[in-house]
Image (cartoon, rainbow, N blue to C red; front, side, top):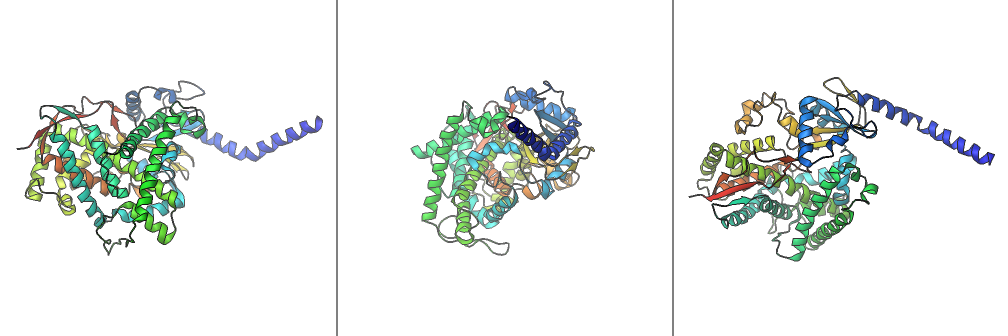
Length: 503
């Protein structure tokens, strides 16, 4: 009995000694972060996170309120975990431009079951390898092929809107989401989806289901942890959706490999091989597997799923807001249509890659849409080193930092009258006066969005095709919509627009 007691005591003190440095560092880090401005704790143990356990629209309002009240930094705490929330461009630059801070925070762990550790969620050498493999997918010669896909799918979207009585308002969300799902499926996987088979319909349904489940886990923050998530009421619903998603992706990959033709990767001086079949991002991944061995079958699945998620959801959100804002701002709509006519000659002509590049006013309008309603409204990083913020606070290595892009884009000191829709904010002379990190719809620095040119082209092609056929009339407006917290920026209720045939 005595021997057992001695062994237990020895083990206890050995563990304390072994972990003393770690415990001491965590205590010092906790004290340092407690010095940040913060909403008062509504529970001394749990912290101030309970303010955010409310409806999604109230969460969104509360975050905006804190961003104004505690600018440029504040602290959110749950138990022993602190997160520094940043809203100033100077601190955004300190983090996003430094390669030491490229690791994503624990907030992205809830995506691991679906996306694994692909380009969005991975870090370190794995992230760098995947980035190198996928960057050629956005070479201009490949983007030219993608524009043809955008035009074809826009034609189908136009046909859907033509079937609606011009006196009726349209809930555009489901139509836009199907449009972006189809464009990214053909661009990323080389698969043309029509959603007329049970397999395709099940896939689309699973995409919507997994979005709802992940949102539920995001709001109920403790469900980020896998062990805790096992007890979630949506656990089995999530597993069922994941099975459908992964099986569909693996079947598409297997079929593409079976018919795979060797390709020549594009370089700065050399355009990509163009054969009878359109190139898909998947072809680059298969080439990397066969030629370099830098990715395996599961890695290919991770990246295809990542692009299917990122490539449809963010663009769909942006296009919803774009149609609403264009409908509400007739002078902007008229200038876009006038520019389309000038560039194309005939507004019904299908734009090429070069044509879309020449539509400068349309590009400024899209940029202003993304300022007002950035699809990715916040990003989160884990600091790879100590950081001193612009306001003099020390953020220790390992600190979770939330960068609130929505607050940055609505800062009245950067954008006067920030709620007004004004594409001329993005005239070259106006951009030069702003901080280089004051506009971040695609993040910035070494971990910026690899698909930003793809997204801009898709948005411009869709707007071009729709405005060539319709005059957009407003139903919902910026004053009537209610924004909510989600994986991407969304509205509480669907956005509605009227599509009046253009004569």
